[in-house]
Length: 138
Image 1 (cartoon, rainbow, N blue to C red):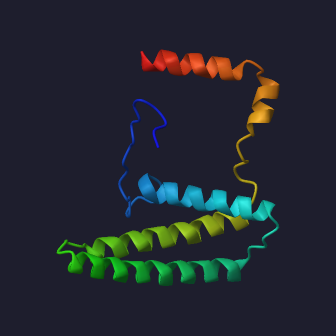
Image 2 (cartoon, rainbow, N blue to C red):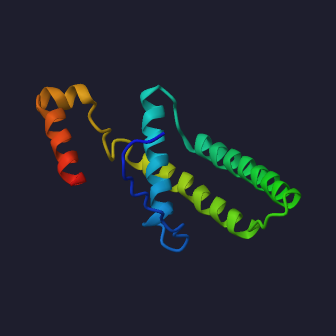
């Protein structure tokens, strides 16, 4: 699906050594956001929840690595199993780190306001956004 004429997709490093940047930071931020959303749905998250989530993620991820490894062999493709498992370890750490951060401060970063709230505060926002995008595309 095209969302714009020009879209600059910025690939990021895994950042296995620097968890405060790249995909490692993004993974932690996404996990925290998911935990906040689950909390708004009434899901209780304690140490046992996060322990189970970590174990489930690891088992499912390793199963997928095994499946994709076999797919690659059948199709004569190379497959970097070590690299894939390293990524799993980084993202598993993201799940745990986000869980620690969430339980320490569940309201750390509030959700972004919905569009109704934005339009209530800035009634001409859509026009201003449109003009900004037009200007940026020039």
